[in-house]
Length: 174
Image 1 (cartoon, helix red, strand yellow):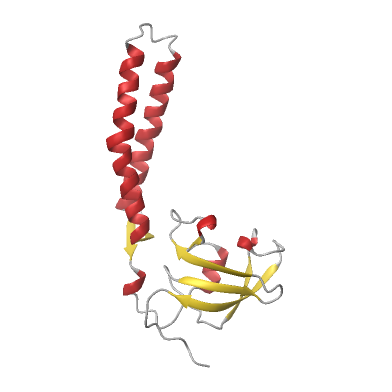
Image 2 (cartoon, helix red, strand yellow):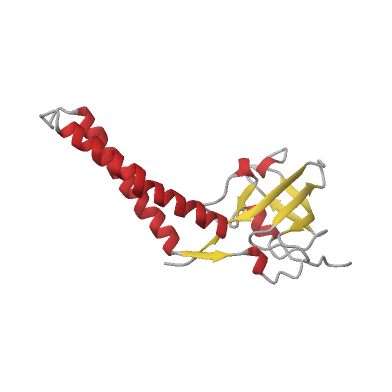
């Protein structure tokens, strides 16, 4: 299985979720199953069925999170020699040249992406168009939902207004 990029913060969130699933959720569902069994006939016991279903979900999620962590390529953006380019983990300010709309995103792994938190997946159309670009560069992006910029569906002409990931990154002089 191929490695999947993940920020250190994203990996920490997954570890915390895994810990919670194993130390809180799993014991709770085991107790719920034991309680439901004590009520007698399991063939018509809705509590038992619900607890077993919940157990299946929890065990599945544990395996999924363990797999994601095992296949994660942890990346600390501060350690990347980006030479001022937009890279994984960078926080970027964008402006739509046609509408003037401005947004700020951080480029993160697929499991970390959350548009409400301003985090876009490294595999999203916007991130793919911007990786390797410098502050001041313009990129054309065909983004289905336009990621917070008006007029979804039209081609966006975005200017990379600023890139911030670690102090001291140079910007390209033109």
